[in-house]
Length: 238
Image (cartoon, rainbow, N blue to C red; front, side):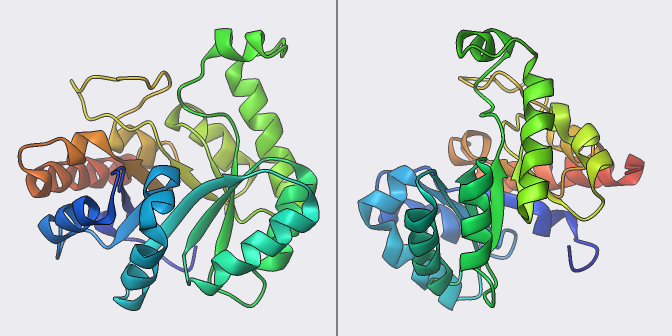
């Protein structure tokens, strides 16, 4: 991190839409409050590449959540193309060789590589079904350590693991999805925390989609989330 971040700078709004026009509508509703947006697979494959370029040209920060996982050379070449877009963050699934290749590819650019640890719609039962005998937390921490060793700039992990990941590194960027304001439905997310809890635990950024996107008043919803983040910062010790 380059310096202390204000709460509104820590909020990344997920543009989980089937087309760029719908995303632009939400961006307009949040103008003046939010400047960091996540573009995922759905929107990117529906013409979101042009939207990414438009947003970066406007000075917005873009988190391109494509979760690359392939052989080193493929990841390296694809990541070089992403870096040309001027995005702030790009996700790569934790795999030592893929992470190292991506980090090499973004040298000299503003793009930071975030290693995906364990998706937030997975719990202990899910990782056991994959053949892993430990807990989700143990797997997340193991993958975070591998990502750090491979040179990742940051990791994606739930707020439930953020404090222990922060203990591994003061400088590692921690981005936390699976955010649900108090009282909100979890939906398909299994490892959720509130905005304030995530920040208090050591997360640098939080990613919020449905609680803002589906709100009758997205601006007010985002404003309340930022207020909760401020409370988390006030009690943060790590």
